[in-house]
Every structure is written in structure tokens, then in C-alpha cells.
Image 1 (cartoon, rainbow, N blue to C red):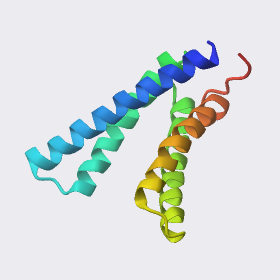
Image 2: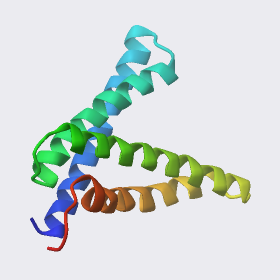
Image 3: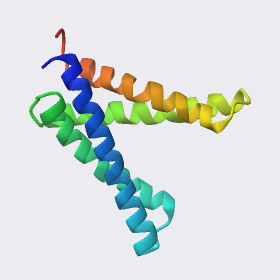
Length: 126
């Protein structure tokens, strides 16, 4: 699969996973009165599972499996840590929180795609 096609699909899956996360978190918070941190934790798990399945099969054309899933989770946790680090660094430098969000939105999805392409699914070339 061409890189551009894979990247576009990855982006679309990211939008869908974000929508899943928001729907679950808001439903648990508003409907079940769950604490926001717990609701977001649960929503993350479901959104990440949906993202794994969709990206594995559609974005990268790979088989589902424990090895890919473990690598996918590793990249996801790395992306989360990078997100926190960027937000912290911008704040520590005296920057506005929106600058941190902008950097996260610009950097983390692209770096995640490259990490999944090169590590999770070991895709080379094309």
C-alpha cells in the first residue's frame, strides 16, 4: 500500500477513534456520573482497541495479532508520553497552553504514523 494512502487512512481512523473516545467519555460522565479521569481512561481503552483493529486491517493491511497489538500499545503509550512532555515543556517555557496543543496536533499524529509504519507493522519502502 502506498504511504499516502496509508497515511490518509491512518488520519481518518484517528478522527473516528477520537469521536469514539468523546462519545464514550461524555456518556459515562453525563449519563453514569463517572469521574472524568475514570471515564476518559475507559474511553481511551475502547478508542484504542477500535484504532488498533481499523489501522491494522485498513490503514496498514496487516493481520490482527498479539505481536502487532503489543507494538501498537507501545506506540500509543509513547504518543501519550510525548503529548504530556510537549504540554509540560511549553508550560515550563512560559508558553500558552494552545501552543502546546498545536504542537501536539502537528507532531504526535505524524510521529505515531511513522512509528507504527516502522515498528508496529514493520513496513518498509513504498
